[in-house]
Length: 319
Image (cartoon, rainbow, N blue to C red; front, side, top):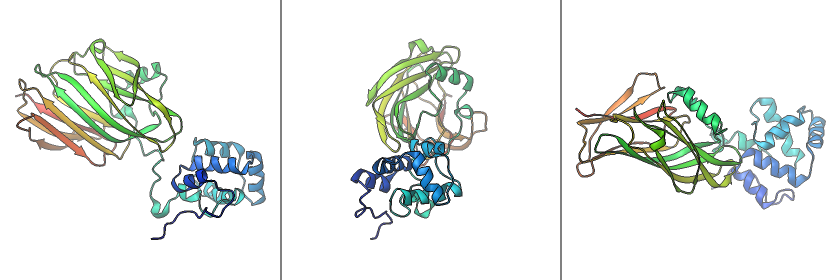
């Protein structure tokens, strides 16, 4: 079957690395590699574009190759087509990384996001903790897969939660992830233990005692490029809070699979469990669905194949 990919085999300006980037992206790395291969300064590229009737600033070209901005407007996309000519690249080889066949979104583009302020309360507390870590709310990655296991102890407390997470970088240079834990009322952050269990190591940890919130920096052993994926695991051992009645997860980004399992101690079994969704922290709950507690392991779970920005959770009644 024929593939709609750029023909680079006979092009002397296209190395094996550049040919691969032109097939898979991301756009900014392909552009940067092409500029390097041609040995053209941005001012020279700007001049050659001007000769073709395209006016564009050196700053914009610099932003494009750094991944700080993506060409999206019609005039910018026309400039990209002219860039292909200037750099001696196959027709539409850069353009298709921005506007793929069929209109599909490139995997390395940052997916639509919702502010964490609308998902997790108290937002001001989280903002302060993130500021202490000098970390932006968008850490440069989005989740494409997350399997989470929550354990409820004999005193009805949240005793532990474990995560195995898969993320994809939507910009270059990402080397960490900040995990958030919010305990139940009475949670003492000083008693919460954080573990880095797989493909990461524990960095700085900060807590807010008044709100029972902990943020933990998980450091990767590599710097991700845009489009790279990373699998890592971590856990929060809690048990310091009072009786737990639900577990919720907020999603800033759409897409990806999420699996949540809640397991109850034999000595503390709920009378009913159900899943629910919320558009935001203050919105009414919807999508309620009863869940059946498994007989042997006393667990319930939900599986979302393609999450939407918002909140998903499991709640239970103690009777």
